Image (spheres, helix red, strand yellow):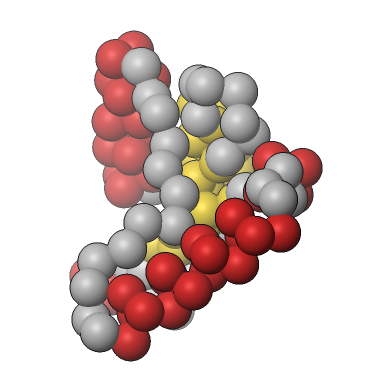
Length: 103
């Protein structure tokens, strides 16, 4: 599900995962009259549900963190989380991103 919200100074798009895990991506744009349009910045953040992130056993959690640490140390790619979107959600996301860019 994609939600677009905002006011004059802030535009926010929230993208929720469709699998029910409560993962969410937020894209924010802060409007400031002092910033030139070509210098405008957008902020993307990923939110994870504490309930689902704490459902692993202690040994699985420790093993996962050790793997992540080795991947980070040796410069390998790693995935912290992913978000599942359906086709109509992708279309809604494109429309929201085009609208947030215009304003």
